Length: 317
Ligand SMILES: C[S@@+](CC[C@H](N)C(=O)[O-])C[C@H]1O[C@@H](n2cnc3c(N)ncnc32)[C@H](O)[C@@H]1O
Image 1 (cartoon, rainbow, N blue to C red):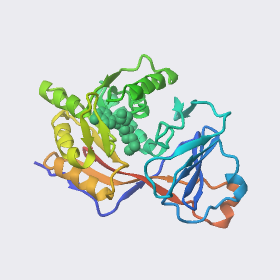
Image 2 (image 1 turned 135 degrees about the vertical axis):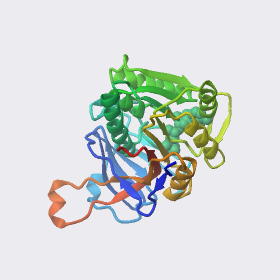
Image 3 (image 1 turned 60 degrees about the vertical axis):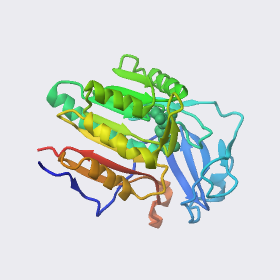
Image 4 (image 1 turned 120 degrees about the vertical axis):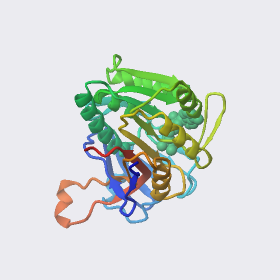
């Protein structure tokens, strides 16, 4: 059988394209300045140890600043928000609308760098839907507020969306309504990911594409503990067993572990050995937007890596 080919020599740095409602305006001195639907925010960014590019004035009066005790602190901290800022507001990416909101986890209820995955899955789903004349079956695990589910459904997939948090599922429902996709074939399931995948394997249920963005640490509905380092190998192995005979992809992203993309690359390549196809891996990064007025000064917009990923896909003939 054809082996899985693995190209880890050159990491792929994927940077999102096509955003109007999200911009990384500037970064430096351990912080980043972003625009989310027109509101400006300052968040800690320990990787930005260079100096800001824009003048001080651009950093004044943001709608929110996330304050932490120290620059490197991963957990804790809180938002200081302009009282005029709404609790949530609608933004969109490539025609799919959804809510943005400052969360206690220092993000906005979506991850802009993930749009590289949304576009990639969109292409593969559309091509399959057109050639096979059926809806590919896509499983989105640790699916959170569901923007990937909406994009997959819009591309023509039937989507199963799994998350253990009732609140996250409620937010995903709200996003589906905001996107006016109430009739889209998305099944929302509040369950522990491992429990769900094990059951699907027992029942012989199969999926053409699987997306997962596991946190470092999480809990299932009944308090089941998820630890990335301990549990990812078993989960990926079960995921392999529920891939259909005509699989499209597996997309694995990780923000939370102190490891390079090589770890995700090798676990994906190991688990998919013998299955054919190809693994690519690297970083999801965001790129600073440079105002048009500064283009002549040849300064290179800086990129900031946000997450590691490994993707497995079949090789099209
Ligand atoms: C989107 S992922 C990771 C988010 C972000 N990339 C990060 O690393 O902070 C987080 C989601 O996984 C869900 N989750 C955590 N543990 C889970 C489990 N055992 N089963 C199902 N969902 C789980 C959480 O409810 C949350 O919505």
